[in-house]
Length: 265
Image (cartoon, rainbow, N blue to C red; front, side, top):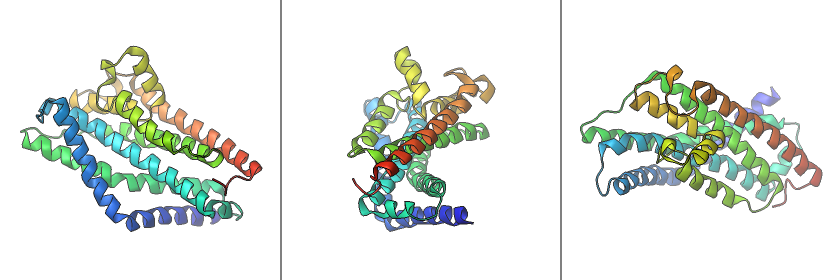
């Protein structure tokens, strides 16, 4: 019961923060779609080319989600550290796992509006260009892989902020890395092989984006993905990232407790 109440409280707190920042949310639901259209215009030399709208849309939806999810959960920890709330939370009997899981779920939900706004904008743009947005239930698997892998990355960054100061730049830099070499705007097959391999290995959204493009644009099945490292890696990579996130967060959390740095930043 203590775990359930703590989990529900963290989810509720995250959703209250989302509602309180509705103005910022609306702004993000406008700016991310505009950024998507500007990217397509730039890549298409001033034209919204149908050949670019769909591939870039899939990458941009994933990029928007990881940006929003990671930043929201990271800043929730940083805000609680700076205000002293996190230290007080650890003095209670609330299992830290309830707080961690609740924050992750709240961040995932809070990231959806901006990502869905990009998707809706892309669907409208594709329709106006005479095309249609393909649908296939198989994309649920790569979408779930993206969500799970992103949570693992968020745990790593949140664990780091418990121990180290001024790591905000890491979250911003990581998003820039995903945009450039994560397969979001340019397919990994077009990048040098070593960079593509590192991206598939470490970037939470890279295998999922490749799989979605294969399914929706290429008409392939999950069991016959022609690009990337196949279905096996699509399923294994997010599990490995999440396991690494849990282990690293747990160790950094214990280190912060031992040093007494949960309330100092």
